[in-house]
Amino acid sequence: MSGLELLTWARGPGLVLAVGICIFGVILRLIEILALGRQADLASPRQNSTGSGWRTIFTRSLPPPGMLRRAPLTYLGGYVFHIGMAIAVFFFVPHIELFRGLLGLRWPGLPNPLVDIASIAAIIALLALLVGRLVDPVKRLLTNAGDWLAWALTFVPLITGYSAYHHLFENYTLTLAVHIVSVELLLVLLPFSKLFHVFSLFIARWYNGEISGRKGVAS
Amino acid sequence: MSASLQRGVNAFKEVIDAPVAAFFASCVHCGLCAESCLFYTETGDPQYTPIHKLEPLRRVWQQEYTLLGRLAKLVGLAKPVTDAELAAWSPLVYDSCSMCGRCSMVCPVGNDITLMIRKMREGMAAAGHAPEGLVTATQRSIQSGSPAGVKWVTVQAQIKRMQKQFGIDIPVNLENADYLVLMSSWEILNYPEYLGSVGRILDNAGATWTLSEHAYEATNSGIQIGVSDLARELVGRIVKAAEDLKVKCVISPECGHAYTALRWEGPNLMGRRFGFEVKHILEVLDDLRRSGRLKLKGSIDKPLTYHDPCQISRRGGVHQQPRALLRQIAPQFREMSDPGVMNWCCGGGGGVSANERAEPLRTIAFKRKKAQIEKLGVNTVVTSCANCRVVIEEALEHYHMNIELLGLTELVAEHLAED
Ligand code: SF4
Ligand code: SF4
Image 1: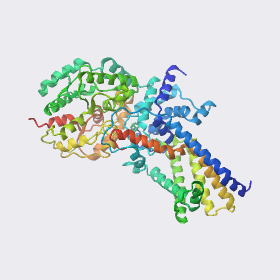
Image 2: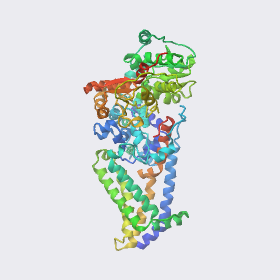
Image 3: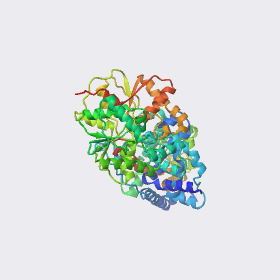
């Protein structure tokens, strides 16, 4: 298969397939979680609570007091990666064009040099987090094959996207094709790996905030 | 699979609900929960990472409640939970977790890890892997009504002493009172002044109150060990007494887990709402203060700080009340680091203090509190949980620290403005 053939496949049937599996997987996993249900809490909640599920969805993005100092690499690496990745995915003009084609929605992009910096920052952050995972005894204990897979699934699209944009390889078409295929792989595996946290964390945070909020604690 | 292991795994399956599934599905293995847990920060031992303590429960979730996990199990690729594994996890689930709730405030994806530990203990106890000390305490609770084996005659003797010492009348089995007063074992055995203090404060406020011969003990080791049936039995005794006596409000004593057991888990264990209110003594004191019925005079003239008991503050929502009370009687009150809902545990909650096996670890974990107190440089610490008090007192002695430890209710009673 030539680069062009791969690109054509990736832009056509490949994309449809990947998006389809991703949507199916996300719905399946959400059902898997929510169908378990939970018992109603019969303890009467406090009336004047500052906490709530909705609040925790937002506040949990910030480090609690004292934590940034205890784990600077995890927090800073995490922020830089997530923000950089979000900018690269959602604010690169060609990506916005693609979203417009798929969803019919459009929003303003950011200038390419800015997206470029964001991507480099995300790549560096991912590498730093990888090193952190290799050396920190706690992370090593928690790490399994799924973590390496999730790391690679995120890293490859970033690096291939960056290479394509800068024409780092002679065969631009092939680079672009590999970039798109790597994104499709990411989409396919997202619901079935720890990357699913991009959806489930909203549920988790909501429950956490709601459970605490009933007791009068903003968590 | 042995019968007890089967019971344990079944209990695991039963406690897994939507929140638990959302939590396990969301974990990104970032390790931040370790940094929030005193059993890790004070030992540096990665096995004390909060989410790691739940590994067997996580695998049951994965193998039973996810499609991929079930497929893996079907083709024999899943690693089943074994009895040996649960035995190995017992010290992690019981000795190195005080159910303090700090990890649940920190996890970036929002996992309520503490809630899952509580749930996991149900399976551990069912599989026969609860620690000896907790098993005995729970058995004693069921037989005698108290984990320490305190009998009604002991309480009666104490009532007599307190009536004499404080010059008050202590009503027993009085119907239609405003308040039913409970105690924890520690208050009966170590801190009898609690009862006298509450009596004086309530009398002074013009409230009616009573003790019950059938429910005087609020400690609930069923919750700590993770046997809901026993927890229900223990809560049920209090509910029955309160409803028989037709009291308006039951006062949970200066004991953290008693409050969690009665106020938050109680109605769920019983499967119904109660016909009375449940309040922690600090809530009652603060209510009285705000309505002008708690008249105080004088002040304690030395620098002091407040240790937040986890179940009362972070897991119970009572963290402003002690501060409002202290500000009135202690002008030199100062906060230690991470006050209120981000407090650090004394190390002895969640049944850890009743678990002899855990003692060396608990002493190490106390180093966190030790450092906090030393940094602040005060010599007086006030708290509102008798279990915290016992744990801290033992640790202070171990570390040769010359710190005075006070119960807040007693301190308030000492500053009552008598009419
Ligand atoms: S509840 Fe407290 S003691 Fe238990 S794992 Fe979490 S932080 Fe550690
Ligand atoms: S802090 Fe939360 S997401 Fe991170 S390892 Fe612990 S449980 Fe998992």
